[in-house]
Image 1 (tube, rainbow, N blue to C red):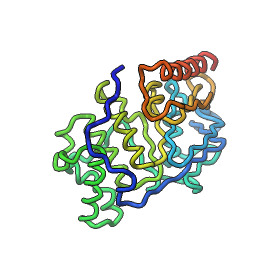
Image 2: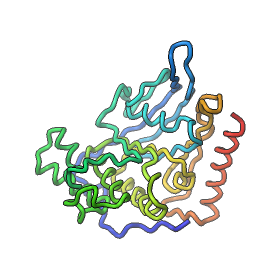
Image 3: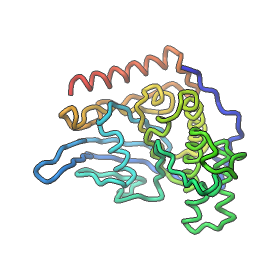
Image 4: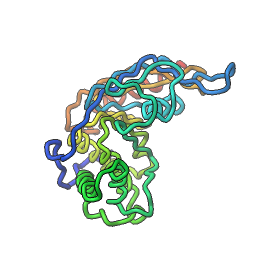
Length: 279
């Protein structure tokens, strides 16, 4: 694995950001989700309880079908739970909201708008003046190291650069919570490594609460304060559920080649594989 190198860009600190800082915790209690017609439902996920503190970075890992993405979609407000409650900043989640920003593997950029216009789109939709929206867009493009690409169109950028634009666009809406579903999954290994380092810097500067879904255990250990291991799922005949939550006490300067890093990685891998074996 290539060691991550911090990008050589000027990153604003949290104190220099001109927008009001928003933070919120996440409280998930007894969450369950079933699919299908009445009397023929399949319980895909059950009894999921998780608290994420304001400003914390939590990663969710597990085999396909264990409910990782379902959990994120419920938090985003795109799906409703069958039972249980979800609170963000003490407010029940009943649908999508500006307090939560979502980044998917598919960048979802508007190809007919420039990079700056893509990032400014959200603030403009919320009534921000054109000048203020441009300033906000430029602020967050600097945060992700894309100032020089502001006037380009998405099709002129690499996949990694487009994902940076997608992250900047979400951050420009000033969300308290950032929900990320395999955002780097489609990228090549080198670009993925660079963006992982970039995301760590962005999180330190922006201080949003992050829930990050990934299949990569190494990525989870590199990025997160805690790693939630999920197992089960309809394909296994057992509802998806949290098997264990693993704290990652490795500090800020994490070296994926170190023995400490790999010990945590092996522990989580064992939990994922043992959970799959026993469902």
